[in-house]
Length: 339
Image 1 (cartoon, rainbow, N blue to C red):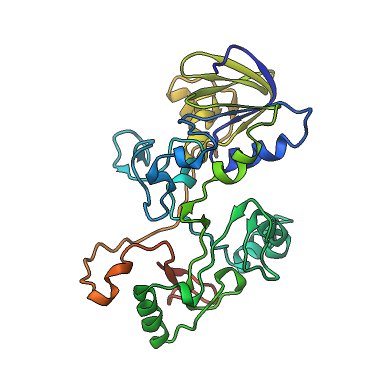
Image 2 (tube, rainbow, N blue to C red):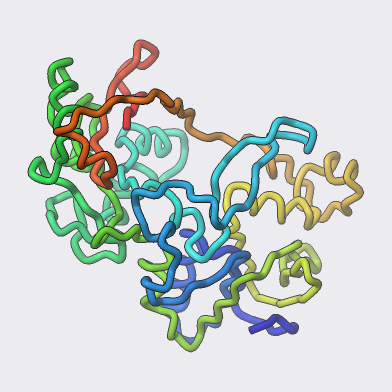
């Protein structure tokens, strides 16, 4: 299917996790037409037809559907290897499938900073609503769209057990349910994962596939968006890199932390001085666009370990354990996670 000037109620740019969730929710109204655009390919609703590396939860950050490196500032700056996937489902198709919630104190801090509705208590119903956790419990949902696997002690591999034993020797208690501990308590336990039947449950599988047949949803893959079109200060459509145009009453950018700001800047929405420097007409002077990118720091260990023969069969597992710890820089919150 191609674009040729059609008009929709809502145009969603990007079919990653945000785009897939929005498409599912918005098309619940049969009178609302939704167009979902994705820059990468779509492999359809048959999971077996998807590339093996996108289904395998033990294959993390495969490079088969890359967006390329990201430059921190100007193109002459050092490129940063920040893996993202250009495919339906977005980066949920290449991630580690980890399913830990943030700490309650972080969410409560957001609410206290002037963001009503963002406390842990406010968000808990939505956490529960989105997951299907067969082990259940008061803090878990059982019939949501995302399957969640929580390993028990019986599921741990020999290597997992060795890590747990070492952590317990150092004083870290066993935490059976990482998301059942909304407080800030150090410990060691299994990492919950959105995996089902040994398959990575990406956003396309969980949110998009069940609603692909809705008549008010149009999905078009392999379409790269250049900019948002505006008229009288309102977003009225998008233009593709190939020059096609599509209109919508509402335009929603779900192109990711890097893609959405880039589209906005090319559209003339961003810091006016920067836009003028690049020869882009200013539509809206919004200094925050394309600024203040934050990510969590991570230290990778490239040490090579010699595995004892009795541990060798479990060198590749999708049931990792993790350790929550508190550094000397923290007061009450947990600020270290070891995977």
